[in-house]
Length: 386
Image 1 (spheres, rainbow, N blue to C red):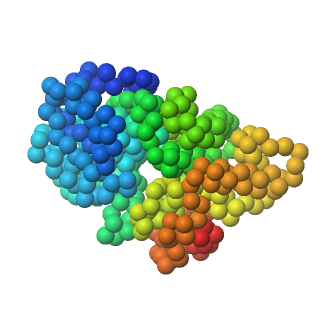
Image 2: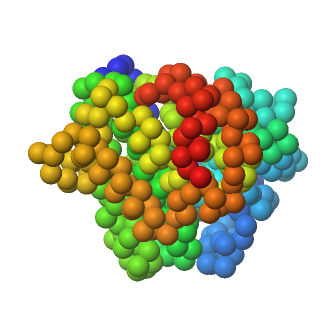
Image 3: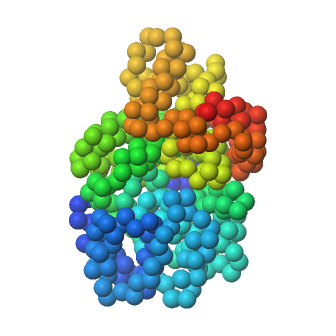
């Protein structure tokens, strides 16, 4: 285990009815509120009206229509609103896309240059507006971390940035807010959670037993509860466990002390940058192919740990048999959850594979990944996904 700093300071208000504490939370920061949200689902499920009622004494300015893969143009629009209305606090109501967008808006409000600079160079993130979130989708963990991913479609770039300063001050997590999610969002969100865990679990670092046990338990949680939530959308136990797993998967518990680059996320970011597909769907497609591609004498023991400790397969089997069975079960799980499992199913062909492979290696620092990959490797993995 390597040296690390762990600082997960976000105040988490978890459970039924926690939104009632919103006025007290917002009043800590001021009266001028930027309310950020996406396509309007919060108006259908009643959350929007509840927020407006609770914050009737505040001056609310709205940043709406935030995209599923938030665009830099929307960030710029939010920055302008913050400056024009002397915003004190940003309230992000939605999933990871809304929260990610809000984070860069919060930093952009105090940055004199273009907000895209903050995406390409996180060292330019300095002063940041306080961020409060109300989570409506279990997926990215953005409600408890300092990460954000923004898309620039004119250059086909989808890049991540990050800073401790971007971590939300307070997040409200009511599992009942997940009841009305479309099934594909529940499934894709779970794939995203699992991918965050995989990115930390499969690392070169030895002896991080605590982190790996956190990871294995969270993976088991996803495998147990996603099918239940899909079958019974109003199952509180399932929604609560998936929601908390989302926060725990990427707040540092699993990845601290395990340095190195991620792999599947940089590859998927290229798919989203060129084709604007759902992030979790892309991850589900890429992940089992990446696993098969990197399976070797050097990595097989880690895949055996995964197969035995997460899928509870018989440890007496041949190592490679175990490893491949664990990978097969992962792919089957995603498919059984209703996720399309080939690129062709989401209308993606090999047209841009060369460009995407180049972008993944360039932006993802894949030479520092669990198994280092070059452009040819990434292209082969994408071809396996067709």
